[in-house]
Structures are given as C-alpha cells and as structure tokens.
Length: 415
Image (tube, rainbow, N blue to C red; front, side, top):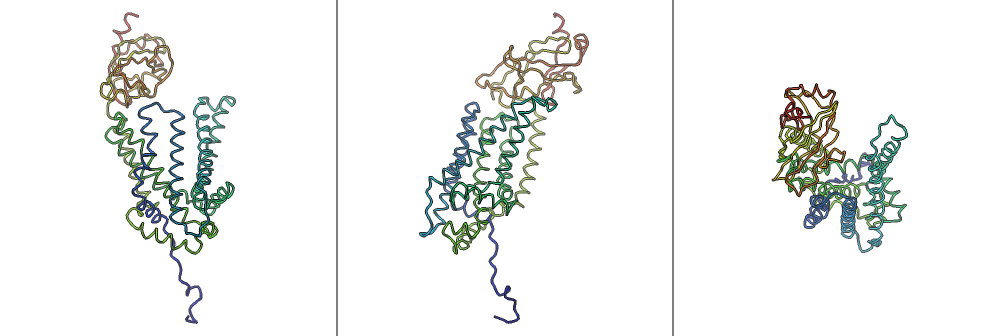
C-alpha cells in the first residue's frame, strides 16, 4: 500500500444496492407465476361485477392479498437461503403475516364504517362523536400500517416471535422513514394509469367488462407493492437480519446477483423518479376522463311521466330505459332542475328512488336485470307553487347537460 494513501481510500467500497433492480430481478424470475397471482388478486373486482359488494367479499379479498404475500416471501426465502440457514416453519410465517395483516385491516374497516355511517355535523358534539372517533382511529391505523409496512418481509425472511417481527419492522421505518413511500410510489402510479386507461372508452362505467378490468387494476397495485416491499426491505436489512437468515457474509453476493438480473427498463420504471412521471400521466388521464364524463350524455334515456308541484317542493316520476347497459353508469344523484341557460331552480335532490314509499337518494341503480324502471324524484326549491308554475323554461339536467324540458303548466294545470 502506498504510504501516502489514506487507509480509507485503500479499501474498496461496495457500491450501494439498487432496491428497484432487485425488485425487477424478483419479478423477472417469477414471470411465470405472475398471471396466476394477478388472477387471485382480481377476485374482488370480478366477484363485484356479479354480486352486490359485501363484507365477506372484502374479507376474502384481504385473505387472498395476504396469501399472495405469504407465497412470494416464502418462495424467495427458500431461494435465497443456504443449507446452513436456520429453518422457519412456513405455518409460523403465514400465521404472523395473516395475524398482523388482518388485525390492521379489521381496525381500518371498523373505523371507516364508523366514520362513514355518521351523518351528523360537527356542531352537534354528541352526534358527531362517532364520526370524530372513527376519523381518529382511521388516521392512527394508517399511521401504524405505514410504520409496519415491511412486517411481511421481516416475518418471511427473518422470522422470530410476534414481538421480534413488529420491533424489526418499526426499526426499518425509524431508520428509513421514506422507505415505504419509495416502495409504494411505482405501484400506485402504474395502477392509477391502468385504471384510467380502462376507463377511457366509457368514463361513466357503463361497460361491464371495462369497469371490471378497471377495478382489477388494484390487483396490479397489490402485486407490485408486494415485490417492491421485498426489494426495498432486503436492501435495508442489517447484519443481524442477515445473520438470522443464515446469509451473513453472503448477503451482498445474493443481492448483487438479483440486481444484475434485474437491470432493465423495468427497474427504471419502478424508481420513484419514474413513478412521479407516471403519476403526472395518470393525473392527465383522470382530467380527460372527468371532462368526458361531464360532457357525454348518459346511456339511459329518461322521460318525465308525472310532475306535481307544491310550495318549496317538486315531485317527478321518470321512466328510465336502458336496453344496452342496464343502467350501468347512470347516477340519479346527478339529476337537478335548472333553467335553459343552466341557472338552478332546485336547491337539493331530496329523493331519487325506485320505490315510491322509500326516502333515499340512489347513487346508482342496482336493479341491473331490468331494462326499464320508474324513478321517483323529489326536489326542494325556494319557490312556492304559483311561482314555479309561472316558469317558462324548466329542464331536467343530468350533471351539466339538459336531458328533457318539463311541461310545467300542462302537468300542474289539473292539480
């Protein structure tokens, strides 16, 4: 060694590991099983197109997500370990992944339900308490999901007790607060692009096939985030973690092999910088879809069959017909009463129901086995009956589009 060379300069520095090249290497090695995993993760989207969304569907969907996580981590632990590596019982790994994953999901589901079912205003302290409590629990549960993001990587590759898994996952978050964001950036942006692309032909969701494919884009998110989490997590392992895996002294060699296999355009696409560009594309597609959704008339044809006016209230009966899409993509909550130039006449849609005796505002029509239905509407106005009857131009609007002119005087003359 040159005596004038500093000791630190004489040591060969190991180049940093690229977690996204590792992720790409994992994906390319698993290319044959990826379609099967995507199909499993698409269960909720496909089932939701056939039956009404329900809690049991969401539960099965979450179980499948955790099952895919378990399969992938166990598959790669087996590939990375050496004959001298300590053995981990697969059942223990699955139990920890399912236990922590389901616990977090149940808390988030309950908090969301608690917050969404409370319709009270914050001005009423007693009635707004469930809403505030649900919001607080929801925020805290998301914080813990963020802090424990790498728990399945620890459970699958390092093992240990429940406490060990949680502590190691929290340590990774504490030492690398932005690691979870780096792992989630590409899955979020790429799945958002897929969702927007499937929605491009019919932004209102009238196509059953395209709507199902759009919903299935969440499968891409879960699959990619599982792999990016492993890639980023492995790159952040400490010597103690590799020692627990039985790869102390071999970790760099194992990761560099995966990194070399994954050096491709895929690795560049998975980086946060590329994810930011993809997010820009996704936002642009969302804007385009929203503009087209607002500008295109609904596939459902509506005809006013009855109109009655009272002071501050207008009732309509509509015959809605859709022989092609069976009311998919038709949203009754978008109906309103306006003048020909668009100035509002109704204040609020109080009722939009297929049942005359039920007070509700339907977001969508669930009776998709029929091609013709009757809708009962009620609108509040700031006009009394005589002032309303004196109006010459009253139109039924759907969003920002007029769909039918109301014959106010003819309809109310016999009242």
